Image (tube, rainbow, N blue to C red; front, side):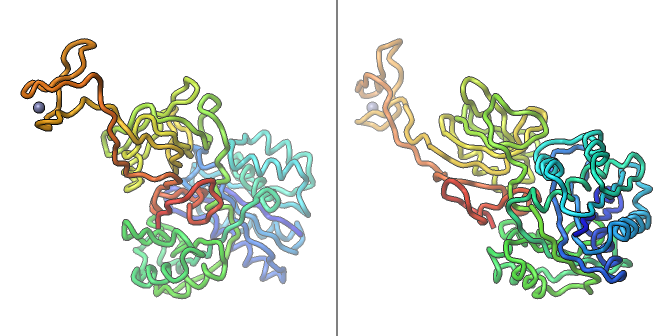
Length: 419
Ligand SMILES: [Zn+2]
């Protein structure tokens, strides 16, 4: 098998998409008589700052010779006007066979950490891989990670992507949303994150300019294709099924508050120290504590109804949070309620008139001014909680590509899945 890795052909302005470049390379190889075995869409650590939102790298598994594969990929990348975009620095890496273990390890690390170009270059120098880079060729980092991904990814999902006719790029997409919602309902949860029912949004249809008409994600490739078949839309120019690590939480590492580092994503447990505060712009902040260390967590405005779940937490609740650390704050993607505070100590109510008693002075207990009734201490009162034990998550409209939807299962507590 020959493996072609491809990265950083995206452009912020034009919204060109690396998945489309991979489809073009696959097509070119088919024209040469080669067979395409697999198309991999690999999501790397989403915290990498210079990348466009998705941080995707692509791999094409083929029986073409390494030379043919490199020539096809080079031609496609050079044909993309986006090479002219200052911020892209495309890279192509071609492995003539199964990659060595150190490349698989590099790939596995790329989901959670940030690799530098020197590390990638060192691995490339030691290998028999072919490579091409434009500008400084930073894209070779992601391309190398994509080459190792077949072995590094442990949990595979699928995305079926339909592409627009090139002369329509940049114009409004014509997709019948009613058919999207119907198809999404029929195949849920084998296909997930197709729509956001709470927001009434067809999540599978991107807003950014670019070649993608829609992308259907799921655990079952047949279900993703079936959803696509049910959607009425403008003509589909090309379609491709990718195997991917999307929806798997591959970026999340277990940790504790004191061990976290910037620009990585973690799952860690603590006690709510201060209940949530809603700040400017509707962003919600919460502080958790564990072993004397504190960590600020945030649910930003785009997470919509998820913020209500965060606001429902109270000081003393035990929770596990998951998300990326940026500027010292964990951006919540999901959290699990482990233990809820169920009672509260309150100034007692008067048994006669029902009014709240008042303090009768330091260590004097409480008394009702009107009736003269007294109570020695505060009363323990049960409180209504609007949360249950288990996992809560951001809605589909706010999901990061790599984040795992609760409906996929495999969590360590009951789930409250958003759909
Ligand atoms: Zn009273």
